[in-house]
Length: 397
Image (cartoon, rainbow, N blue to C red; front, side, top):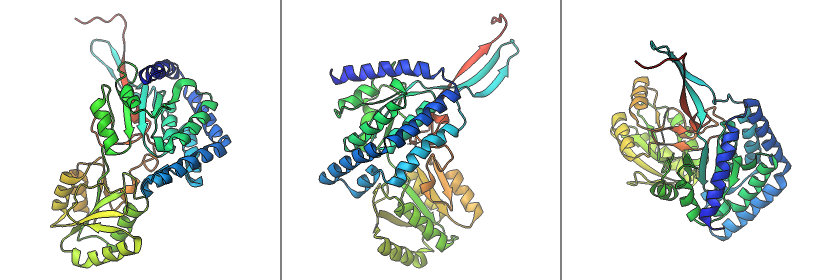
């Protein structure tokens, strides 16, 4: 079977599965999630072994340290992945929620109600836990999902898909096993079968999907996140936030890529930054605004004041996550209001832009779009809505 026919068959099965999922009760969906968590634990050895094969191939291929980090299913990450599925089962079900009701003078009664999208296609790179996070969120919201991972994680994803199948979810969760790049094009052009596509990966992947797509795409191109240290900042706090935002996991999209320092503070603070960078192995750069390093590198610039910082960020950021460190509440309020990003922080590390940290459970991605979702996408962001209108023989005059 060629790639076109393979994707067509998978999408057709997913459409049928979505129709059945939409009828499931919350209890039924939660039972499926708990069965998935149990199956992951049961198949742990096989999944870890498959991940080891992927890691060996990745090292042979010379993948970067950040890519290897994303690919690795450590025991802690495996446990967190399973716990995340169980946590999603405890969260409120948004499907069927009444957003608002209105009764009109005509006599009609209108309800705006949350409903599933239907079928979601997710294309992702490197991180195998994305497969499970996505499957859990989609099942909870009554959406069928077709996932296509990168070649570097193919064995891990196959093992995870097998564990999910063992949980009895049928065609509601499917993995595209072919590594042919045309599979992605087929997915994003399957109008009438795929309702929305979500890329999780580098800018090159995302732009390629958007250029090929005939279905809606929820996306962010890159994560160029800023830390601005104001002259009214606590320097110890500023250094702690910078360290966490840059070094905790430098290869992720909410890691800081640019440090902005108030010019009056620079003579005092920059020696502290230089000592920190030397200690942590961070390379400082200048005049590289807008660069996403995904490594222990960071651009550094000075600005005249907090208003200049806001202007700099709005010009050079990717509108993902940006932070001001200051003890001046008025400046912080202006920064939070005027920085045009999905998540804006005051005295908080940008590493908190995450579905789990926001109390959403697992996330399916972080959107820097302004339609339909923005920021971490959890359960509510995986629903749309419809209007149900009732009456007693009402006709329009």
